[in-house]
Length: 144
Image (cartoon, helix red, strand yellow):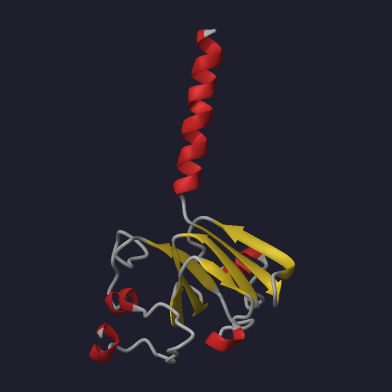
């Protein structure tokens, strides 16, 4: 009986921790059709997974996710909040995503900070009412 209860406790803890983790699923075609690539952690090079420059839609189940058009979380990046994104074309990222990572509640992608990465933490979340193409250069107006 104690063994069954211990196993049940481990199972409950495992399920609870997986529910708290962030998750995003990228789809090869618009409207969540075609091959999919789910992840709950950072992927600095989608080419290694066979999914580089192939995402056309996405579903963010939990957390905020930074998606970038270059490997290593560089290039043009935006932040996706939980929700369904049937087309990434409006954001300028259709078939262009090369890296993806979850952000913490402060908008940071990693605990370690490398030279030149501070300005990427201020990436503006995607909002259909406001769309601005940005580069990797800091602009104080993004903080408004």
